[in-house]
Amino acid sequence: MGTRRNFLEKITISTVGLSLINSPASLFAASNETYQGPELKVALMGLGSYAGRVADAMQDCKRAKITGLISGTPSKLKEWGDKYDVAEKNRYNYENFDAIKDNPEIDAVYIITPNGLHKDQAIRVAKAGKHVISEKPMGINAAEGQAMVDACKAANVKLLIGYRMHFEPKTVAVIQMRKDGEFGQPKFFQGQSGFVIGDPTQWRLDKKLAGGGAMMDIGIYSINGARYMLGEDPIWVTAQETKTDPEKFKEGVDETIQFQMGFPSGAVANCLSTYAMNNLDRFFMTGSDGFVEMQPSTGYGPIEGNTHKGKLTQPHVTHQTLQMDGMAAIIFDGKQPIVPVDGEEGVKDMKIIDAIFEAAKTGGKVDVKV
Ligand code: NAD
Image (cartoon, rainbow, N blue to C red):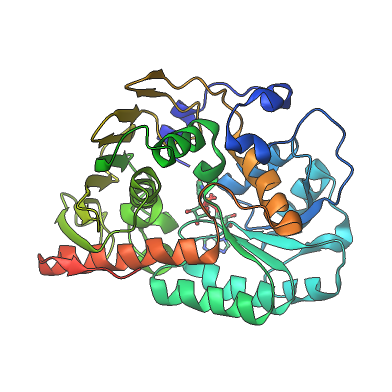
């Protein structure tokens, strides 16, 4: 993605360290032992920047491998096919990919295209009888997300969303601490997510393809983070939008939104989502008895964190490697991560985003029912 991402990714440890992770993430991590079970055969759809990161990370997966490619650009199919050793017969374009239905070498399709395309593509994949992994945001509103959930249910395939933080060791450790009551009663969350977006012609600034602006792309991390850090779903939101460049950020494309969420326990969250400030990647949560601060909190890592009990020391592992091995465990073993990554989880975030947009527009407090 943007410069913020590149800035954040500095080190990656090899899978050698994986078995040392003392957290529930290790349930999903590959180990050095030879894996004997089935491998999740994944076709990547949309061969752009994030798909490249996923493809490279999947080279270290023990339970998932790339067996198919879907792209509208023949030269990319050839280049990626050669690089990742994907047979020519498993390379498709956007017109003919429904034919994966008859391809036993593909179990799942990982949709990594612009947000506004996810819903229709997911429905086609589900109709082809293959599991769907969709990047976040799962669609451009809750209705789209629900349509994806319904289509996957009807086709009896799994729908998983690319919430890589749900597999990240330090994040998992913090969620476990919160579940164990180590922060006492969670009270307050602050999430700041943003970077300065470049090229004004990119799809991320096109309402139809992106569904919005910073909120859909990066603000969603603070929304999802508030929910997993506090352990609750919000019941109301308020929001205030600031737009300094209406030429670049057209109608329906948010530049900066500050938003608040209220939770049933009385906990509150105060968050900032922006395409106008660089390197904004910080979570803070405090409960009645303790706190955690993470910065970076959702970048590609290493994640850094501190709590009232000291520094978080779980090792960095490439998020997408853990995610894809974890998703294989979900599909093959029904093993659930500490916080789900299913379609219903995705719809919750979409409902909250819908409410935030409404609150920003009306200036009022909007009830949310996830
Ligand atoms: P990108 O622009 O680099 O790649 C998008 C790909 O989709 C390109 O290969 C492009 O050719 C293809 N595409 C197909 N149809 C298109 C169309 N009509 N218009 C434009 N492109 C089209 O974008 P990206 O950064 O790889 O993002 C793709 C998805 O991945 C988005 O949903 C984004 O939110 C998500 N993403 C997730 C993370 C994460 O950390 N989980 C990080 C980055 C991006």
